[in-house]
Amino acid sequence: MAQTISAKDLKARKQEFVIIDVRESDELAQGAIEGSIHMPLGAVIRNAKKGKLDHLKEKKICTHCSAGYRGNIAADELGKTGFQALNLEGGFEAWNKAS
Image (cartoon, rainbow, N blue to C red; front, side, top):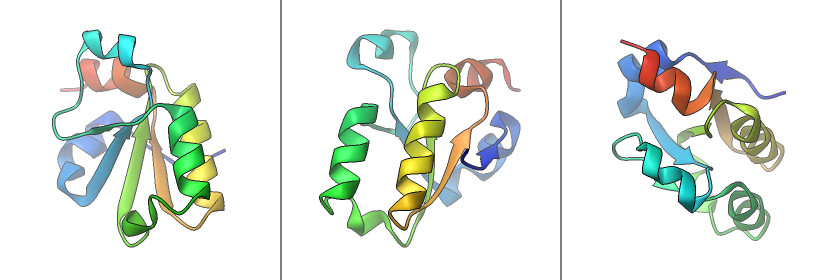
């Protein structure tokens, strides 16, 4: 399990993170976190293993999906390859509910 950050904390500290949205393209119709990078879960894992994300190794990353499951997998896989990655607890649903 990856470490998590609450939506409220992420909103307050958003500028500290590179936010990666691991949802599938069709899910983006629900909206997106401004400034986030869209990269579906499979692509995150492949890109990290191939070194295509190495330019982000010195940055804090927050991953998210709709409700938290895929975001957790992404953050966990990134952590295994040397990234500082957290998962947005509750995903995009929590982001939308947080004030």
